Length: 338
Length: 145
Image (cartoon, rainbow over all chains, first blue to last red; front, side, top):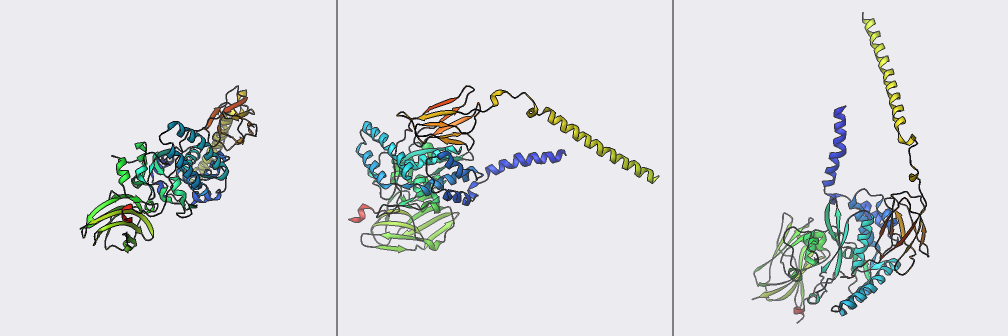
């Protein structure tokens, strides 16, 4: 009898703690995603009720957070006009803190009204909503403000924070996510927003996240050891949304602008988070005159590290884009000298 | 000799089973006797009460504010005058969470003498910024020359 009781005790207490330590990234988010889509048309007039609907049928905090995150990314559209209006005002009042504050107070009301009425918003709105919903589900979640870089941004004018995202605590550990970027992308020609969920921005690896996200508060890097300097962030290569689904880190080159002698090997190195075929790796090399697609032959994949070596035959100035199949990963500029 | 032993064994089993039955009966009676549910010691403060209230912001009454009982899926919404009546009887110690998108939420703990809740919500203070992501391929300026 005593031995039986001891077994029950062990089963109830000890094995539960093992379940806590196990890697929840192996949990299937299928059910959470299904629930999120089921309630896609819900409004924001009753947040506690929305949270209950999204989370009551799920067993883990990770799944509950996924349902909330997926819901926000699938239901709330990005308002490009609103984003532009705010951008212009913030630029205009950059050196006038009184007027900037006035504008922000006014703009805040507009943002919340739009969220309720049209279910559209801009990044801080996404981050705010994710935080509020997560907190209502008793999940610790914070908004992180900082700088973000994209391919169309003029970094010479990047001197004030321009983006918001989230940090969330699951099973005692903090993770990063970017709901704005996870939700989709404006059409590059029409600027009309298109929903296109990118799971790479859900619980992203902090190493790749730091390539184009730079938080104001260093603790939100979630990196051990030295964190990238602001200058390193400004000098970094451009990476795109798909980079987050293939890679956990970008190792080399460390800068956007590079120089190499012709016929000397230039190395690209990235850390893979999933398996790929060497044949899928290609480079698109753009010069002023033309664009060529190259399948480099010096490719190695070892210990989840993708390494590409390429020799430029002719001197010149090139924009080099790395692709995995048709997925745009990163861009570098390379000046090839004689 | 064998037959007598068998009878003795049978008698033993019969006695033990009855003893077990008595033991269980006494145990059950003891459990129910000491169960507080059956006692008359419950105090009157355990009885629930219907709570009413208003929710407003710095400008005036807020229509559509949410009031929920923390930890439960029970709640209500304020009318055009910002008034509400909580649909479920509340007890001392219950916590109401009052919220509205864009305002800081308030938690209100029901006290023994609470009958009416007057909540004033203050605006969240957030700086709004927005960098939109793009898949447009980077084009360096130098290359254009």
